[in-house]
Amino acid sequence: MRNLRKTAFLFLSLTLLRPIDSYATETTLQGKVMQVKDGDSLVIAPVEGGQFFTCRLYGIDAPETSHPRFGQPGQPYGEEAMKELKELILGQTVEVTLTGKKTYRPKECIVRKDGTDVNLEMVKSGYAWADRHYLRGPYASAYLDAESEARAKKLGLWQDNNPVPPWEFRRIQKGR
Image (tube, rainbow, N blue to C red; front, top):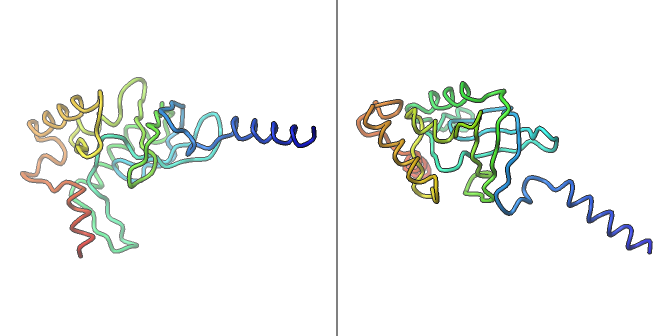
């Protein structure tokens, strides 16, 4: 009987206090944006408590920022993309939908502020590419259309005639 109680207590504890990593499917929570790491990565503090976690914005890829400590240069518009994201949501409470997937980076999430898709806004403003490598489902056409429109209007990074996508920039940097 004693072992049964211990097992039941352990099961309930793990179920009720499961970490963010254990979400296998899409889950939505409220969180406060504690840090903007770059143009497509944030640190979120769940409003209901729990550990802070790093979240990569699903479906987009922003220009890389410099990392002087590691001797890594950034891309044109990397700092501007980070500034844009900070202005949109730093210190704000947002709705975070965890997709349940991880890429080569942290958890993927879709962030909404007052119902507005922040990921899409980064593409619309010209500070991120629609990430064709991972973008799926209902987001694909909206994100790709937003990128085409930002290109046509020469917004953000599209002021350059032929900007280097972040995935190519990273590949080049690895080969250095």
